[in-house]
Amino acid sequence: MRKIVLTALAVAAACFAGSLPASSSEAIKPPSQSWGFGGIFGTFDRAALQRGFHVYKDVCAACHSMNLLAYRNLRALGFSEDEVKGIAAEYEVTDGPNDEGNMFQRAGRPSDRFKAPFANEKAARAANNGAFPPDLSLMIKARPSGANYVHALLTGYEPPPPSVKLMEGMNYNKFFPGGQIAMAPPLNADAVTFGDGTPATVAQMSKDVVTFLAWAAEPELEVRKQMGVKVILFLIVLTIMLYAAKRRTWAGVH
Image 1 (cartoon, rainbow, N blue to C red):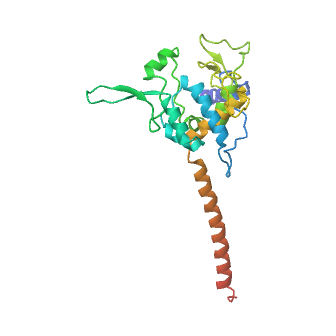
Image 2: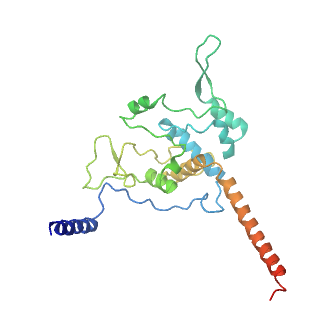
Image 3: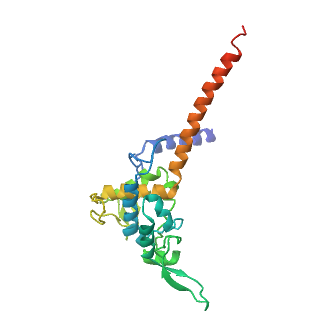
């Protein structure tokens, strides 16, 4: 009897808990956006990719690394060889050792990886009040509903509701798990100037940098989709041919 009573109480408690409103610590599901690279025929908009790299370079790169990318990879965004060389040369990288056994600084080359903003994790945490800015190379793949989530996060900063008490140094973002995030709002209107004249609104910068991050996480996406379409077309033609051959082979059999 005791066991039955305890079981009944547990079931009642579970039902009551299920009827309660979601905790404020739960992140809100990000709304779906229309992405040019989505769907079976999706491709990357080169202009958006270049604008997105601009946003990353001028805003995000101050804290976030992209260790899996080299400057030469930017050719895929539509930059010319000379432009890529110029972008790489803006940075000083450590090389060596030289003939004397010493490390030295030199201008970046297209073959170099993107320069990280901090020498190591401890330096990154020291500069960000203990928080560690993650590498963004695979960020879109590392988060559920990656592109939608990152876009929502970048545009989801707002004053906290009265029921939420922010911890020191934290910012409120309803799309971040827990609602409190150490990163301050990274995007502000007109924070960058796009060469093609596109207005640099927060929403525009967010969509462009997400497009760039999606490309960084899966640069072979367009080739993969093209191959998939070819395979599907081949299988359709093969199916038709096999069906016609079957009809012809068995036409005289009753």
